[in-house]
Image (cartoon, rainbow, N blue to C red):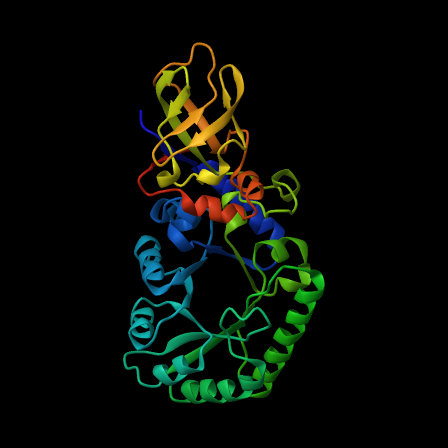
Length: 343
């Protein structure tokens, strides 16, 4: 059997329930960017819908349209990477909620025909990951109000990203966010939804939850680097890279995954995998294979869980060894590894 990426859908469902519990009374917006964090968009979205998720954060319009095709007309799907007139038109056609963080997009909306866009206006609260600057916020509100008056837009919400780097930075960001919402109300624009927090703040800081919390990584059991562990958060990894032994020789045990499958070569010599004889060090990570320190009775065809669910190390464990984040490790898993779903 070749290497696979094994995804436990029941574990995913348990995480979704845990997220829902943690962010209540806000609703969980499940972020499914990058093929549901490389776990497989269609299968994960379908299971999330079955588990009661009704908001999806799809990053871009193409992903949002793909989610719509899976779940049908009743889900709310929020996208925030919008590239211009064509993207806006496609987003309106797919009945998506559009995160608008660029004033030029408001001008583009005025040119569209074929229905009103559902708009969530983004205030830049200091992260500078797009968003309308505070000093330009009043002008953007005026443009949005004009679009609403002309039936070109429905004003649905205000949102932003925060850094989650420190409580003090996040408090400053929240103050800007609240001021922006106050200004919107003063301009006659009442948001139905406010959303500011992602995974970490959504779990840890109740005042940040507002109406929606955009949670991606925690939903897939990926804890923050340098932060609380999975057990403390109440989440569990849902996926694992499972490799097969292809050869055994005096140099070691050869597995059929390598850097082209997503395992960073910089992890060579830095972590162990579980074997029938106990932990063994991963000695070399090549392009298409990994060599593990040998053990007695190793045989071709044996399966080894390299990282993730059931392994000695999670994606975030590996990330911390090379000063990155668990999400980065998860997103590196190649589409060439077949996704195998269990329940």
